[in-house]
Length: 184
Ligand SMILES: Cc1cc2nc3c(=O)[nH]c(=O)nc-3n(C[C@H](O)[C@H](O)[C@H](O)COP(=O)(O)O)c2cc1C
Image (cartoon, rainbow, N blue to C red; front, side, top):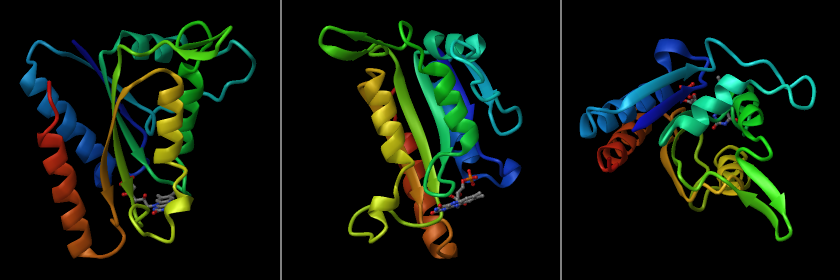
């Protein structure tokens, strides 16, 4: 089994999503000690923007296609995903590789992959939050991976991180409990 570990936070050692992706990968690797882990740090080494059609980074695409499980650190930045992560999405959305258009419309080609998204955000966007419609981060990733045919898509969420120490500790504990439940 190959696990692809992707981080996109710009917050280095203070990053919540980085701590939680590391915990997720450690948990999965403990369940499957033979697992190979491939790491891509989009915060430290961003991919270039697509400059012309067909100029995607084949390395990023191959890493994604070779992975059985993909663990993605996806903080909310200005209501969406970090631009570094958006560029990575651009590199892996390749017709004929991860999706195709046929007589019946679009067809995702990534049913084999499991994707686990670690979502971190300062505010609260779930439940009855008046800001629920501002969530263009998880909703984008849900639409994107659904389009690629990924049906085993999970979100581990730590939200309300900017709302005080107590809220932050509660969010982190909930996320760590979710991680502990992830199957091999
Ligand atoms: C550039 C930037 C933009 C942010 N924009 C939002 C936002 O729109 N909504 C929100 O709830 N939190 C926002 N935050 C807070 C982050 O989502 C929160 O700090 C989260 O922990 C970031 O994950 P990280 O610690 O892994 O970087 C923003 C943080 C940064 C650095």
